Each structure stands twice: as structure tokens, then as C-alpha cells.
Image (cartoon, rainbow, N blue to C red; front, side, top):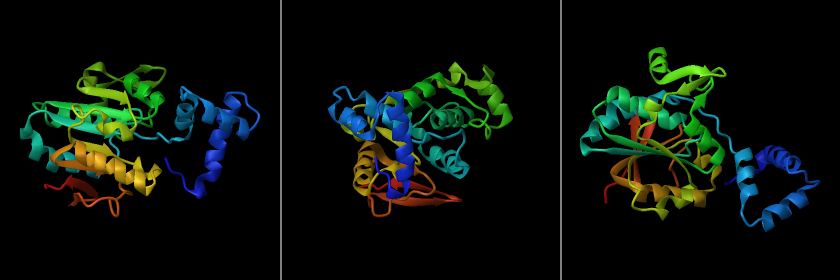
Length: 249
């Protein structure tokens, strides 16, 4: 993970919270903990502290419209569609994709895998309890169909909608460690690579290319680009949205 110097104060605040949480007196003491720790539990807690996991259902609607109206109709004849939500956070993206597939392609078999480096957000994704903020863009009829509003004011995603959706704690750098299960038709990785330096971006995008099936598609955040990262994808233009398609060798 890479943070520019402009975010120094932000990182200092987050580290200070961890120093206070484990009752140390200085940054030097904390740094020694990170260096000497064998199980690496504290570095994961630090990751959980500094990573921003703000997301919500039906984010970036132009991209989702392109998926629904252009991309899925072209590939639905392939059989089971496999989708990766890379940097899945607390599950809003993966469940949004599941809702789209269930509503508009009811006869299509699919599997969705969500992965994230934070064990906390993966646990939240599995639990699937969401605030009013997270569900604010879901049409009312869809919300009533897929959610119960009954847990301390939270919206609870119904178990029926969780079928064919799985979550795992995983570092993006580990993607090709399990090649048998690393085959996808579509990868969503939005607002994740902004935390990576150029070399790390190249490594991760290369892994995406290896994991994508022939002519597979990659969705990135609206402010993100593969410029100077790779030439192995073609850019596809849709109204207010860009999607990358794996080049055929």
C-alpha cells in the first residue's frame, strides 16, 4: 500500500489510535512491535485502521448499466458466469451484482467471489447488515424484496440473496496462488489501486489478466486508468462509463 506525503497527517492519526489501543507510549515502541511481531496480527489491525472502506449499493450506475445492457447479454451463453469483486469491502458491490443477475438474468448461472485484505470488512460482508446510507440508492421495490429492516435499525440482506456469493480474506498479490479457482469472466476492482504505487499496480493488473478468461472484462473506478500500467486491455467506451476488455492474443 502506498500513501503520498500529502496524507502524512492522516496516517499519523491512524497510527496514534493503534498506539493508544495497545497502550504504548511512543511511535518507536509501536514500530518495534511491528518489526518483531511473528504472527503479524498488529499489521492487519493497522491495515483495518488506515484503509477506507466506504461504499454503498448500486455505486457508479453508468458502469452497472453497461454491465446489464451490454456486457452480460454478450457473454450469458458461456454457461456459469464467474465474477470477482476485488477489494470487496463490506459486500455492497458483490451483493449489488448478485441482485442485478437475479433480477435481469434469472436463468443465468453465476458465482461471485469477494476478496479483501481486511478480515473485519469480510466479516461484515458475511453478516450483511447495512445502514440507511449504504442502501439509499436501491429502488424501493428491490429493497423490500432483498432486505429485512429489523436489526437495530439496520437493513439485513436476506439469506436467499447470498446464494452463489462467497467472501474470503485475501491479498490481491495472492490471486494466482490458487490457479484452479482463479478464473473469472468479469473482475471489479474499483477504488482499490489508488492505494498502490505503479509497480504494485502493474503486478496486480497482470494477475487480473492471468485470471480473466478469454475476452474477459475489468471494471475500475471512474477516476482510475490503466494508462502506463499495461497494454493488455482495450478500452471500451459507454455513456459515462469506461470498461476494459482483455486483449485476445
